[in-house]
Length: 108
Image 1 (cartoon, rainbow, N blue to C red):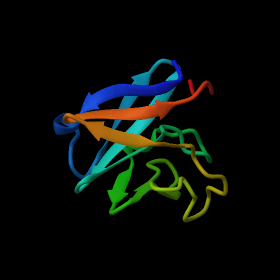
Image 2: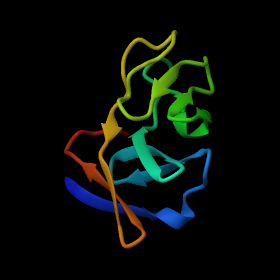
Image 3: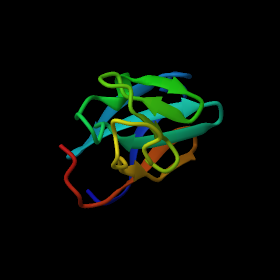
Image 4: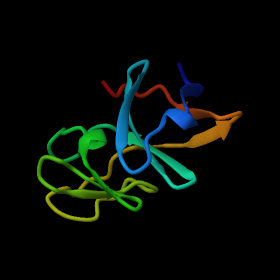
């Protein structure tokens, strides 16, 4: 299932909070921040909590379990206890639909 994959309509994405979307073996946390859409693996690199359930602050997501924060643009951890980044997915919108670029890695 590698390549650009349609996962949602942009209009269905809530503003200011995340949603989890499953695409093949990938579990993806998707966030709409104003006109930008970000997608990261839906697993905190510290404790495997769902990042889609975390608190969104601009382009940072805070893990609901232990409060580690990540940059949605780069996946880089911004606070402890996380020290490893989370995978980031490239996104694009066409005709009101959101696509993510999937590769062959297994996420589930």
